[in-house]
Image (cartoon, rainbow, N blue to C red; front, side, top):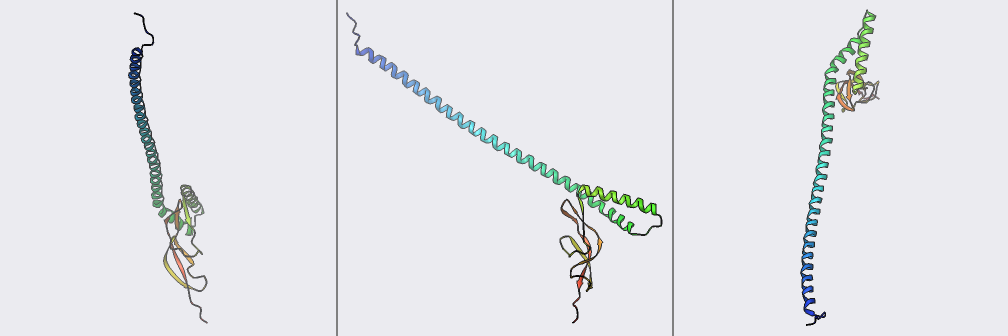
Length: 184
């Protein structure tokens, strides 16, 4: 029997086999695409979590640095505060007359060295004498009635006030002038 090359049954078998293979390949391709999408979503999730943790760590690091700086500044201000009475005593001692000029000169040198060291640490004296009274930096402990100066002018400083690195460490204790009403 001769072979018929135009046999439609052979074509049908090839088409059926090709269709099955094609549908299997399409299903595998869809599975691979779904897995790819799932992995991409997981990667994006991990990347987002990584970025958030990195930002959290950076914020933590900055907070610890700021707290460390604040602690050191607080400790320095406490040490300087403890030295202020010594500084006051030196100022009072230097205002007294001394017969021994060498002793006085030595005291003055020690006082100047102490003041310079405290300035390097951040201590700044508040100038008060002749200034207008400011309740934020001055503590009025006495009033004097006068017509010589303007009202609320500081006429005497009992204890010097200080700022430490821009913040008030101790207010100046002062005497404030109260202007008398001039009689006509």
